Image 1 (cartoon, one colour):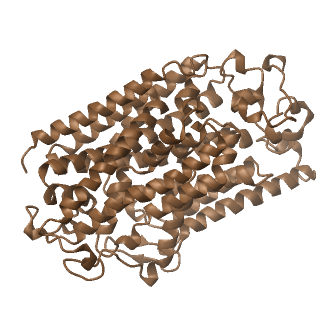
Image 2 (cartoon, rainbow, N blue to C red; image 1 turned 135 degrees about the vertical axis):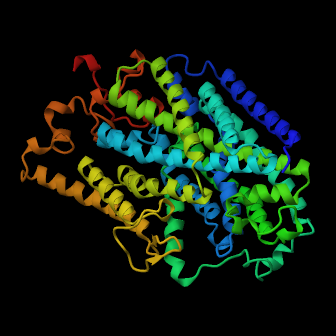
Image 3 (spheres, rainbow, N blue to C red; image 1 turned 30 degrees about the horizontal axis):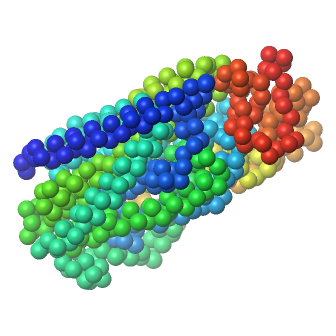
Amino acid sequence: MPFHVEGLVAIIVFYLAILLVGIWAAWKTKNTGSSGDRSEAIIVGGRDIGLLVGGFTMTATWVGGGYINGTAEVVYVPGYGLAWAQAPIGYSLSLILGGLFFAKPMRSKGYVTMLDPFQQMYGKRMGGLLFIPALMGEMFWAAAIFSALGATISVIIDININISVIVSALIATLYTVVGGLYSVAYTDVVQLFCIFLGLWISVPFAMSHPAVEDIGRTAVKKVHQEPWLGNVKSPDIYTWIDNFLLLMLGGIPWQAYFQRVLSSSSAMYAQVLSFLAAFGCLVMALPAILIGAIGASTNWTQTAYGSPEPWKRQEADMILPIVLQYLCPVYISFFGLGAVSAAVMSSADSSILSASSMFARNIYQLSFRQNASDKEIVWVMRITVLVFGASATAMALLAKSVYGLWYLSSDLVYIIIFPQLLCVLFIKGTNTYGAITGYLFGLFLRITGGEPYLYLQPLIVYPGCYIDENGIYVQRFPFKTLAMLTSFLTNIAVSYLAKYLFESGTLPPKLDFLDAVVAKYSKEHMDKTTLVKNDNIILNELAPVNPRHSLTLDSTFTNKDAFSDIDSSPEVPNAKDN
């Protein structure tokens, strides 16, 4: 396949445009937070993101390279089809549930990151533990979408896949370092427009190619391969349900999502943004579904691609760029390539910023450098953006299946973080003992269930398990949901058991080594623990951002505006008085 200079020029122009928008957004908002809250402005954008920009950036966070390429891939692959394309519906329902139940309590309390309520309730140690699956989720997500972009560019303009991944990652990382959430949000507006326009322009040209059968006919009748509508066979029903619940519920506890929620100007706006993004995700999935259907309806021997078809060459994950390359005119394929590039960067920058935000605030500031200056936190964020961007790029070069990485990135979040988030927001009385035990139980059940994508054999074989062509045991039983429920119920049971044992005197106070039960109510700690609703993070675990905010605990951990309706919240004495 020849090297297309025109395609390379188109990509360079597009990348420069995105970079300039990101730098412009950073310059436009450079004075936001200049009074000492610059780090918070980078994380949550000064909490003044409106409906228009907020709706675009929240939609673009989910509509990434994994979403677009992965949906097209699973619709195209014989034996799967549209019936297994769960992500569009799953993530849309995830956003709706997030808006109904999670956005309001998180935004009304004015948290800065998703991990704030965990550290407020369970302490800094538990916050550090929960950072691990949250970080891995963001990195797997970013790696999956970088991999999608590399495959797309290498197919259409025939340049080395490693170079395309690295250059794309550098662009996304650069404007994220410069402007934080502001740059990410404003570039998302441009990128989402490009995705919508680029893919919808490509679909009619691909569909009208002479080698493509009527997709209405191939949806229900076998022509070149199995019908692309697909079906769910009886033995796979529980697997389908398990994966769907993973996407729907596991799509909620992501920092990338809550970063948008917490950047909204009000709790109501945060809910509305979630509903708008749910609709946007469905709309943006339509062209990807059609491209997958077109790929399944094509007689590839009548195209320059030739025989055998893509899935037999193990290139099903690249069906979207293959359709653009071989079924569309050259100039259309370049336009579609720009659309997919936009999709990748719109999600990659969000994941990288999310990971660096949690590290800088919840690990570096609240756990190790509690007296760090605002300027120091800003520099830590910039350095970690570079580090996490490089890490995601390295993983992207090792990726095999976009959809496989996509599911894997949600596993840890679904099984570990989701039940913890339910407990910390809605279950009164849970404590650090229950949180740690639930964490370990969920992790144990997930690992022992095996992972075919990583060629990891299960230690626990559930009913319905079978051996695939690679000799790996594959579970049909919904063990991921079982692991999540076990983690949730264990957290509650152990928390109440520990509370009973300590408060009844069965266990002496000295055994409360996590200060999660006895110390929470002891007189010597009460002056330091007057947090909202008597939560148990002590004052020296909080980092005073600046002298203006070190007088009250409210403003240290949350946005002070969120407490205007809590008349009974007592003030905390100055830290130096303690």
